[in-house]
Image (cartoon, rainbow, N blue to C red; front, side, top):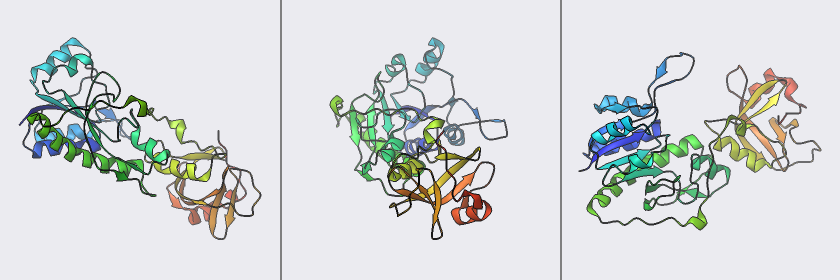
Length: 313
């Protein structure tokens, strides 16, 4: 079994860490992001991977950077045969990648070379991809450009899938694929395959402003936004100087109403918002400073929403 240094940070990466431990690999150390302040407590909290590693009795390192020579020397001192990487949140510098004899194996939640970069799951949902999958690859100096070692079976993207839920499923699948691939890689029974650059697409880091709805867009794109940007940055609009989050919606065919995109009206008991093409029916939403509620309850509390013109700025 290999001596491994593991790199990961969020909850999804814990699947891979625990799978490697259960497969009896020797875990030399875990590298994760530094503790950060979350919520209103103002108390720094460890990453989920750090919490899991401490529970498992694995040494933890949380350097601000791996580019410093002293940090690279410390990493080298662990004598890893291989690095295992799952959503670490930082790019490993070339000097670090050269340390383990078996290289650095990375779990990426897409079918590379499609959706390289930091937001593959959200982009797959937003683009309306019918399916996605998981890749285990060897890291090189580029952004998800290294050779492929293994890929999962296609994973259908359902009509109710969100980025949060689908990411968890993919990393759980990726954890199993990593263990299986590492075993074959140790034995020399698989060969790396270069990526087809002509098929590559690159995703970008999501920003808060990505969740602001442009009501001139078609209803089906806005519906995919609510799932692609769940849990972050969320999908929202402006009404009366306040932020209005749309948490669950459905698309609807345009009726006989003559209204501008962003106009709110009722159709029977439904709260409907006109889009550039078609309309959406709001199921659940949340106004700034209040709890999330179903649309019927919201309309009872805020009857003036009917006839409102929602803003896209």
